[in-house]
Image 1 (cartoon, rainbow, N blue to C red):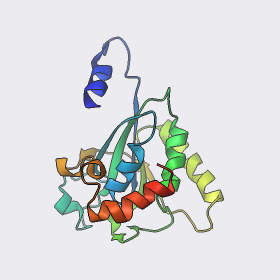
Image 2: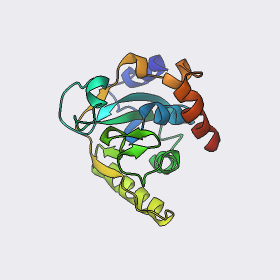
Image 3: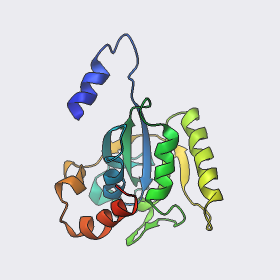
Image 4: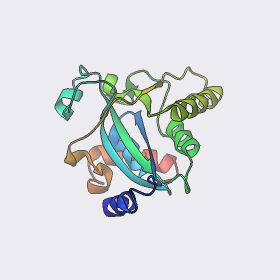
Length: 185
């Protein structure tokens, strides 16, 4: 998958911009969010990582204390000719509980907050509109942050493609698999 992405990004790079776009989302543990979006047609790549503040190159150990200000997030690279940002955001609201502050299930702390990190005004407006739609269908207030992306830091390699590499690990069996089943993935 990375070779396809690299080829697409470098082919004719000087003549035209990439045909792919990216969005950074956080909805609890990045393993869950990554597993959801890796199954979506039109999504080219999903990278688990950290974002939300200016501290440079955080580690999992630092972020997991909840004191760095980072959130566990995923950077989603997608093909807009196959899937729209609106559909990616619609799935975001279904794939986690955006009404719980700093928590998703047993994962507790600000690193597990619900967050959309936008890279430009168009993404900010799309995120705000999507949140408004989701709020209309929610009984509880949505607490999702919508903030500018300052920097995305990829997580350590052992966090990447976690569900695919560890389908029988406890967290995968008891948390991720039921989420995927609920979403029909």
